[in-house]
Amino acid sequence: MSATVAAALKKIAVYLVTDKKALKVVGGIMIGIIIIIIMPIVAILGIFTGSIDINTDRLHEMISEQQSVSMERWTEVENAMANAGYDASRIQEAQALFIYVLYDYSEAADFTDKLVGCFAENQTDESLINAVNAAFGTQINPADFSKIMASVRSSYIDTSGYTDPTTKNNLDLVKWAEFAYSKGWGYVWGTYGSVLDEKLLTSKIVQYPDEVGGKEAFIRQNWLGGRTADCVGLIKGYGWLNPESHQVEYGTNGMPDIGADTMYENAVEKGTIDTIPEIPGLAVWHEGHIGIYIGNGEVIHAANTNDGVIKTPIGDSGWTHWLKVPYITYTDQPEN
Image (cartoon, rainbow, N blue to C red; front, top):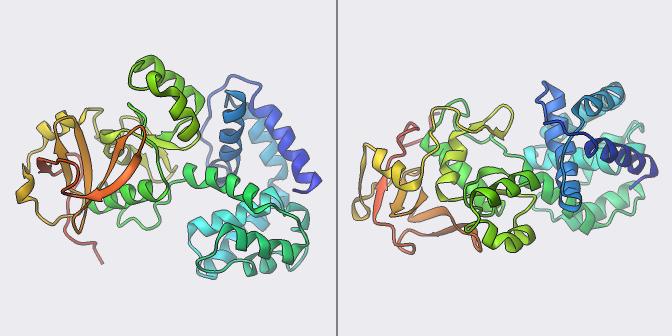
């Protein structure tokens, strides 16, 4: 990492942990910076300091000071990556490289072309960083980059492939579940897809001293800093997802905070598991547990503290009934 960027991150770190203010949502490009770049730093710091309190006023001021210098290049990188056919996750990687380690190189006229040229399809972090080091003469450690990107990847929910992010529907519930599975979300009782920071973990230990407090050591080692959910929380988190802010906002969009058994009881359309129709986005249920049927005989569910979010054949987990989640709409196929 360059000395300039390292010094900037050190300054940001000081301001992030010195004031007891809650994070305020700001508009436009600031949201992108905070969610994609600043919040992962906060998550990493929180793991080591036990605090992710943020001085949002000073943070906003610091970002604004640099905005005129960096935002043109930020947007240029985003557009160039998109034009090259890369999706949102690869764009995040390019922007993270720009902000974290290549900022001192960004004034060069060919910077964006060189950065985009480092990317390839089906590329590992190691091969990407090897290409970056060769192009820019840097000495980035691939393992360090992977650690940074692990936080970015776990903290950002990409809705670009949703059929209709403005509604709550069965097809996008499947995409939400598949995302949770692919990103290796953990399981913590009483959570619903938010990033498990120190504050949230502490509150859940107090709320559930046996279910969470009794497994605190495992949770800290395996799930802290990433997204977590319990079984019904995996469904509620989709209902509470704000597609504009990419944040899970508790109690929104008509999705009540209820347990798995109540969700089954409230369902109008349901039946025994042997009668399940081939409709992706149905829920499957047995007493005390619920999962998401994604089609083709497979279910994604937040299983337990040790396993987190997993994918299993429908016959493997003792499901007794299916149901249509009563708080979303159902369609058989994506609309063209």
